[in-house]
Image (cartoon, rainbow, N blue to C red; front, side, top):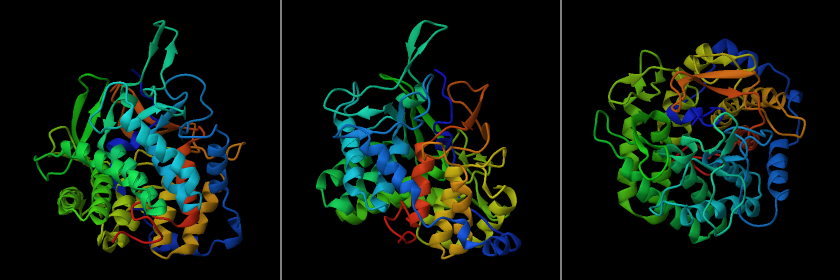
Length: 416
């Protein structure tokens, strides 16, 4: 089925730290602090999005303004996981728990799987004990109800983000159910372990039950996510097995480093060895936040990203260019806060606030359609793009930027 990648284009990428060469940094430092409002509107938006729903466990729509097609009523696991973490960062742990409880229910009440996996997306709304539905849509041309193959599948990076959300909730609430849920997810996702090339973990599974396709490419971003999640799980369980899994994922990310470029490759091709040289923003930024010791690469990475991915007052998704990426610009702002570069971080937050929707949300991109540099897995002839739509993921990262909160470490600090 068609997958419109306003959804999750990032899932095939890998992390990228932002960069600011000297001249750009000086310009940012010179920007007036009053350009950024003292309020924290992203936290308010997320809070209202949850409290507007009936009581109980729920998943939020990733693109709440969409009324038709693959994105209509779709609640992506990644977006909801980041939103749960952001709500904790905002001081709204009870609201975050409603999303965390929905993730636990999804583990126990899939319509087919009972092996510890989550899907990439579900239908938004209240979640109960009934088998969870996928969003789906009525296709006028075929006169059939369709479901998106991507949403039906399970990317290893999305599983890692659900682990991070549950572990954040465990730390904030002390509720052991969240730690146990993260442990179940870890046991499933370690099945994506791969011995080819630099090792690491493959992309996951694409498509519907009973036989989704194993994605044999490997992503820098996915392995960064997994390294952070496995490391956190090792700390809370005391189990050295998860520390070893963390090392496997982190070693893959380290092998993606290109000193000549001053950047990380986005990952590998299907053969698990050939590097994909696309420069993607999150594949640069996230390792610096997530991996112990990676911050030593901040200067060359920041210079590379600033020279190649800078767009207007923020950053674009990849070197495919074409638009301001709100979520990615917020990711850079978080990193700058963690590196104690508050002035340029404020300037980026001001750019983000310029991309608000009428109801207080945040657009995915400032462009009508921003290319990612990838093609759709559901239709390799079509590019994967972000659209100028209200986006939960953008709001969640905007809140994290406002708080200077690292979702990989659970606080205002780089990875330990």
